[in-house]
Length: 90
Image 1 (cartoon, one colour):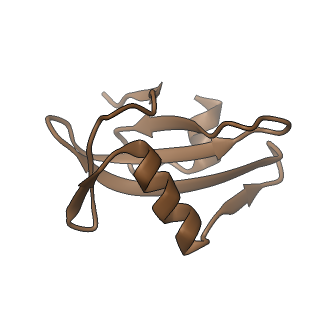
Image 2 (tube, rainbow, N blue to C red; image 1 turned 90 degrees about the vertical axis):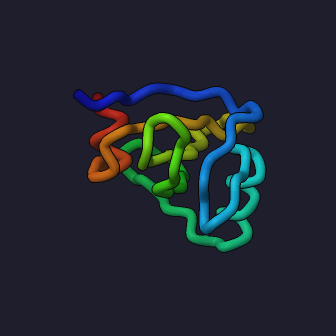
């Protein structure tokens, strides 16, 4: 059974490209890389990345910013094959 949930952007560490980073640092790295995507259906900008999470294994993180919102939201899925729209529908 897979899990899809919203996650706080606190000090949880995720394994990304050989280093342990928290959500804020990971978002900064993704912004710097400049590979943001846009979902026209939901009018949302988002990043999706597969990381290692201790105790769970490989998970997929989705950072998204909804229209008229300043804050980026973080969602986690244990099924890395889910697209952003499929995850939001669940």
